[in-house]
Length: 135
Length: 135
Length: 135
Length: 135
Image (cartoon, rainbow over all chains, first blue to last red):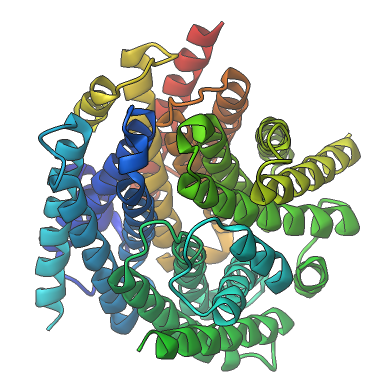
């Protein structure tokens, strides 16, 4: 996914306001995390202990929506606005940390939570690095 | 839309971590702003002077995605996380200010930009008030 | 919401390929249904009997995603493609019927399901009427 | 992305109503196509000849929204509804064909349109094969 995303960044006719490698990594991480969270929410819903997984499901759904929106915002370079990018990355980072912690807390019981925690941590790291590069 | 949204808040069986009136107003404002921005982007695309409206279209698309994600996050009370809510509102507020300023700058030329600027300002105000109530 | 949506349709500089009243009604119904389904899914998740509401939650989430996508597709008139509009409306209609039936089946136990069933029926009706007008 | 998606399908505690390989391929294709269309729309907007790319931008935006919604619907197995899955795949297929044709028509001029046409064709093929397996 990172390779595909990098190809599109290179095919863009305008200026790119961000580091290309960090950007491609972050978009790919957002897309993978959004998908992980959508799948984890559905798997949690199917567990016998669904009543104990309510917070996990909500955190998954919120993280999926924010990661999906962030991937889109990061993919638009025409009329780039650093303030919007920064606030969006901050929201995504906050959701990924929250969801990563929640999923990690029952990663030993559910494989989908283990996989989702990994995706959240990777996405949080990518957001942090892209944020740091914004100065 | 605010009335409908308030009915769902009252029908929720769990605790609501936010002021109900400010919450209903903010969710409705996000939904109206998301729709305004989607419609404004398409109308800008159809204008003869589309080449001068590139930034407006991008800002609209970003604002639409962030408002839609914010309306969803604000509608989930089960497993409420104040940090995620705060960062999401901050991102939405930033996008609404950016899009409101952009659209207002050619509101006299395009009625869709005038309507969109109004929706962005109303949404920014609702986000600010809900953020302020979070403490 | 219908009034606001109609204002944007009138502000569009290009041709509108659909009946304006049916279109404004359908976009507003999609947005209200998307919000109803998001809120109903979260309220179901908070119910003591959440384990019995798994299908309702999934149907709600699917219907929310399809209604949100349909509202966006219907709001884009530039480069209008009747085949895409028709298939999108058909998917939205199918999801609204499925979710309306599911929510109606426990509308007497949960007020959020009663409200959501009403939103789904209204949206299904609006999609059917817009589809019929497409010929 | 297909491998990641397959891991989540295998980690799901409930029954999966669809062929696992076709499903994983289709979800990954939808996510890649959604991202390709979002990136292509923004790149088209930055081209000097943006006024000639209006239909391409709209088709991209519609295809992105439908592919994103389809990836989510296909990722929910709890309370699986074959009618909703079928209608959703049909809408996604229609949008991918429309966008694939549009982008292919100027693929020799813009590399982002060439890449996007490839993603649309791959996604259309994956939707067709999954639809065929539904019977």
